[in-house]
Amino acid sequence: MKWNRHTLWNAAWPALSVGAVGVALSACVSNSLTVPLCVAGSAVAGSLLTAVWVHRGQKEATARLRHPELSSDQSQGGIFGEVTRAAVTLLQQYETELERINVAKGELEIAGKLQKKQARRLDAALRAIDYPIVLCDSRDHVLFGNAAAKQLGLVPDETSVSASGTFGDLSRLAAFSQLVKETRIRAAAAPRRTAEMDFLVDLQAVPFRVSVTALLDDRGESLGTVALLTDIREEKSAKTRHAEFVSSVAHEFKTPMASIKAFLELLSDGDVSEPDEQKDLYEKIDSQVDRLNRLVSNLLNLARIESGAMKVQRIDCDLNDVIHKAADVIRPLANERGQKFISDFSQLYLPVHVDLDLLGQAVINLLSNAVKYSPEGACITLRSHMEELEAIIDVIDTGYGIPAESLPKIFERFYRVPEHQQAAKGTGLGLAFVQSIIEDMHNGRIDVESTVGTGSHFRIRIPLGHHDAKRTKNKEKQPKAELVSN
Amino acid sequence: MNLKSRHNAETHFMPCRIHVCDDEPHIVLAVSLKFRKAGFEVSTASDGQSAWKTIQAERPQVVISDLQMPKMDGLELVRKMRSETAFENVPVILLTAKGFELDEADLHEELGINAVICKPFSPRELLALVQSLIEATASVAE
Image (cartoon, rainbow over all chains, first blue to last red; front, top):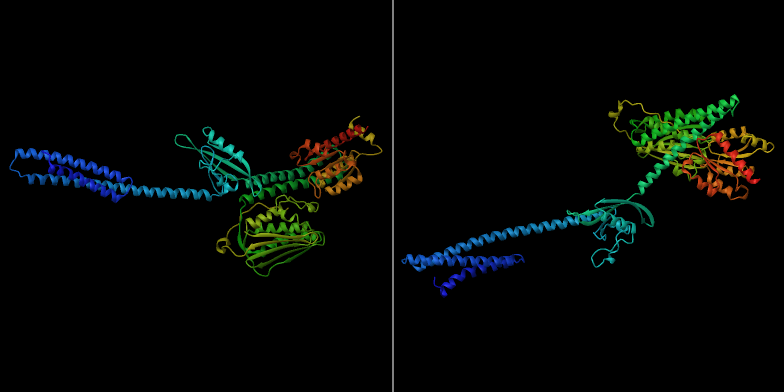
């Protein structure tokens, strides 16, 4: 083929036209990624078209030599058509590819937004957690600490942000910092380390359990550490209470055991020779054995109540039925001691849903205390009435009264009012029972008012109302362990 | 001569006096019976405050005291005793059910408590201990 102005133009126009389309498309897409892609694509497409055109031109020249009868216009029109079709096909492919790229771009944008949302959610979650959390990088610098951690001073102020973008180091809290460092360095041996440390909260030293975990990537490279702190005040307090309880139990057992051992030794050593004296000691030993037995029973019952193992058989009944029985038990005891016993029961039916035996025992315990800690001639009153939505039982005595400093402690296990210890025997568990029975088993409440020398007033409140008459009416009661009054 | 007979011989005209202080009446009774039988004069109290008054009045040679008592506990009672010259060297024995929770060496160093006896205890051994303390005090005085 001979190259002249005409043939040169014929060769260049497809390339130029496709390139122009490419530039136009890139302008439409206006994206930093797609512009060079479009230009490059246009250039390639143009070159391809030119090559096709040149190849077709050569074939046309050959055909013209072989078939001179064909006009040049016809052969020229055929080449143009093929080139146009090829260009259109390429453009269509290009458009399809662009569409695919745009879809992928959209998906990426959505994924990015989701990722940002997820990060914000995680950040909000960490900030919302009450437990102090501190995230450190692989140089032990604090990257993040929630509000609780900031309160403990584990996150340095943002004003101390260093040039590297971290929040400074933990040198202020050497022990914590050391634990973080050790966990990171020795992550292979133990990825988690725990220690107990005190931190200042409202100017008071508060014990925390610090658990630091090393963060490693897939290749085992350190990403830093995360520290979670737990306030263990309550845990420590529970342990202390348990230790005190065990100590009290041991003391309560040892005291009667000491009497028994001492009396037996006196008898065997012949220190008590008179038959009357000997009889007296044997009776004392017997009473101390009873005391031990009472202590064991009370402890077992208390444990069963607190563990929920005590079966509660609540039935619908009149509260007056409960206190009538309690009055029948205590009245003779009060009379024996020369005390006046007054029953002042409500004339109304007081509907309650209670365990007759347990609630009865609670009332007996209160009445028994009233009798034990009141002198001869005192007055013991048992009263019932209705007040708003509650059935009320009052146990009032004109006895010794409880000192103000002892009032907050009287429901504690083994607590005995020091001034009353000589007045009567006791395990210090009776009122703990009463409180458990009223508050834990009957959703009620017990309060006390007392004045030394005037007397005490215990008030039990039980929610009014029957539970389900049909369901509980014919329910047979199971035998249960006897509760022993203190 | 064993300790008991020697003690009885030496204190023929002036029997030894001890004070027993415990809020558990049975313990007071058992200790009193044992020591009276051995020839001692025994004063008793059921709380720290009345014990301190009795000690000041009776001037016992040995004090046997419970730890937990109403009004004034055993340690406070000993502090009161040590604060007065007349009682700063009087031997004290703590008789307590909480003996295992106490450090006897610390109590000896800080308050001059001579021994801690854990309940349940043997009246016989308690008597022997008191006799040895009285003997030791007497030999120091000589």
